[in-house]
Amino acid sequence: MNGALSPTAKVVLGMLGLGARTGYDIKQLVDVSTRFFWGASYGQIYPELKRLEARGLVEAEDDPRGGVRRRAYRLTPAGEAALKEWLTAPQVGEFSVRDEGLLRFFFGDALTVDEVLANLRREREGFEEVLRRFRELEAEPDRGEDAARFPPLALRYGIELIEWIVRWHRRTERELSREAR
Amino acid sequence: MNGALSPTAKVVLGMLGLGARTGYDIKQLVDVSTRFFWGASYGQIYPELKRLEARGLVEAEDDPRGGVRRRAYRLTPAGEAALKEWLTAPQVGEFSVRDEGLLRFFFGDALTVDEVLANLRREREGFEEVLRRFRELEAEPDRGEDAARFPPLALRYGIELIEWIVRWHRRTERELSREAR
DNA sequence: GCCACCATGTAATCGGTTACATGATTAA
DNA sequence: TTAATCATGTAACCGATTACATGGTGGC
Image (cartoon, rainbow over all chains, first blue to last red; front, side, top):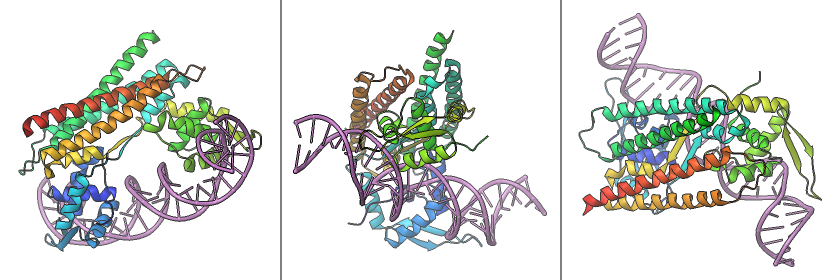
């Protein structure tokens, strides 16, 4: 019917579907959930909400809290349809990775084994730090009473994936340091 | 001494270090190796080579093949130093993932279990396809006689990571379909 | 003669981040 | 009173992709 959704429109509609109401809401939610595989900044969210309103996929009303102006959005039926259409679209989704640590590793022949080892350790510590934050997130009581079950499953995926990455680092460190001695 | 390297400068210098000579070379090499975690297009490579030349990190000479004009680049000592400096820089590198399949999964509460299952299967097949291409790459005889050992290790990492991702999909499909029945 | 491949480059456009600007409310 | 948080928005900038333009070479 109408054109495709922009990347940001996808999170925005999805988050409205999960109960977010304001642009600020959406940003907070993204930052504690999808940020690691699908981010969004104010600079995208607010203009996108206006575009979606112009397309009739969301509707809004002023909803001030005291003297704080606030604009509350919700999905229209057309917006719900567009969300559902995207969620069931029969093509594989966009997937990309940007990994500077791996790029450095790829160019490892220009370094000594000890230098590569130092890089691996540093990167691993970075991943371990992310892992700690993910586990804290997982431990937090689910403040949503609406019982969304997939968000925690996605978080689990993230935790287990990074656990795997950490194990790969440890293993590779072990193998390289064996030959360094 | 001089400013930081742009993302594209990092691959460009690295590939020159591995023996690439022309912009075309660099692009071909990137496309069969780092593309999956660090891409580069002509639109970045050629202008970047000129900028690097202006900064004195690479030098170039015309090197026509018959009537085909061709410009051959190589690292200067300053370029080698800049490459090495980046490769041993003591901060964790940039890391980001963009995963639309996971975003759809995150919003899975808006779908039926069967729809989520269909999504998981489709995404898994996409990853299996990538896996096949990676394994073909791995099977290819190493056309470089210069015995770079880290590029194949990086490819191994990619293969094993995607194998993990495929297993996660299978497992999750199994668990969801058990409850669907 | 045609197609695949080698080779270089630019312009338009896009998606995104960052910094900035503004201002109210609430809790310490 | 001050800092944190709620709340909305824009402008400048950046990195990147895509499409386009050009043209030679080698093999079928």
